[in-house]
Length: 356
Image (cartoon, rainbow, N blue to C red; front, top):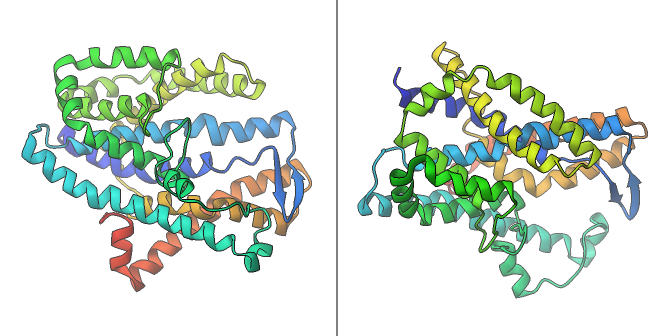
């Protein structure tokens, strides 16, 4: 089996587990939540907070970086680059990235407007009735300042991916010439928090997308990662340190968390490369992954509040049960919507998922 085939199968295996991680990131059940105008206090027991941190911060933190690596690898999958190929890829990404990005954000905007209708506001008492202005609408499509998010907030990833596609010729030339040296200054900036966020661009996106490019250009990376069997032990130790420091709110957590991300990525690829070579190539719901990604942000918060209102939890265990129930329901609903649309409106679905 060639390295290219191994990576292709590995990517298919990773897609669904990674998107589950993304959903859990957006499911943090902490602090106070307002339901029907009443504040619901979430338990502040240290063990409860530790569980939330483990499954919504520590473990899934590798999901988005790996998606960027995969995107970079697939974008440069031919292993070469020229003007003609770039223009072809731009046309494809127009339909697979930009069109879905605009459509999903527009759908989210329409939902915002819908729930602000006075006659319906009683159904959504926690939604602000502030005026919807043109500047706010425009910023909702490309919120760049600080940690700005688009209307459909998970799509910040697509926003940054679009920028990576635009500057891909520059990345190709620089990474091919500088090789590993290209990544050193970026890693230094990451460790010293010198990461500018302008026009939706972040160094993190650039780093991991370029790492995917590097993996495609220099295929020996696969053999190197396969030999790193020891990395999983370091990863598990770092998980414990990450969980401990984030739960206590220690400043050193920032640096430990970075090591968790790097060691976690190596651990995941080490495991999946070896398992693929052993013939374990099963993959779940790979067709539905993008739809889950784009749709879950539209309703996960509403679903969380609805479940809290129905179940009226009191103890930490009850809150914890809801914490795990909400992402499972979210993923199941998204898969159900995808399959219904595939039967009823396959063309609309194809546009929404960019032809995937």
